[in-house]
Image (tube, rainbow, N blue to C red; front, side):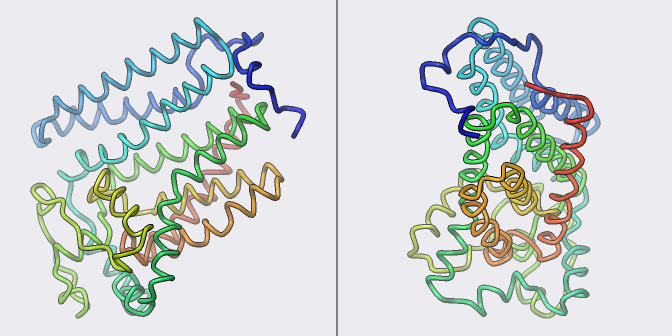
Length: 326
């Protein structure tokens, strides 16, 4: 909607309609924090450095309230965007935080690897890169995977700049899905092939044997080397992102596939063809790449697609029903 585009100076103009309290997506984040505080209390004696987890949540509260106060002092679109930018940055902190909680629960990878074997008769994550060893294909897979946050920023920026009336809806749907995935990841400790295969031994995996690994992840967080063309630019980008924030957590369902499904649905909702056809190829690559780089089992991808569809319509309907406008 071109009519919603504003000149740069207009982003500093005081808003006539000012939201005095927290926004819907901020309440979602606080709700998730409350859930994790309950988990910390229940698991306190088993957690490693639980005090650090509490300090992280204190930092989250301080920064969230600080950007809220900034908006209250200068209620304009720019300071409003600062609020969602802060929460988007915190998503990259909440993700590895799930590992600190679920690592003390019984690991379920043997169960999921067995299901994978029963359904497909093999381990697609073990064989995919072997069957497609070409450098160009590896780069496409890595490019698709590392596009994750860029696609998220693209969709949020599009709604903020061109469909501001639905910006609150897009933000709520996205954050609602994210934190629902994080709840699942805390309660369902599945690490995925890149971590489990190393712990169990690839010779066992190739033979169709999926041993329990006990408390392995209480003291280990190393993963297998990422398959693919190691000299590729996007391969190196992938390794940088993995080294910065990847942990043995969050395998089922694939939030990468689920969130990208939601981003594609938001693009379709916008009816902007350029946005749709920009997201589409990266969406397809993402679905393939998660298995190719051994981040997920194939069943994680299927569950990611189904859950992405489900969460999109649930949170869209919730937003419309309660009219959770910005």
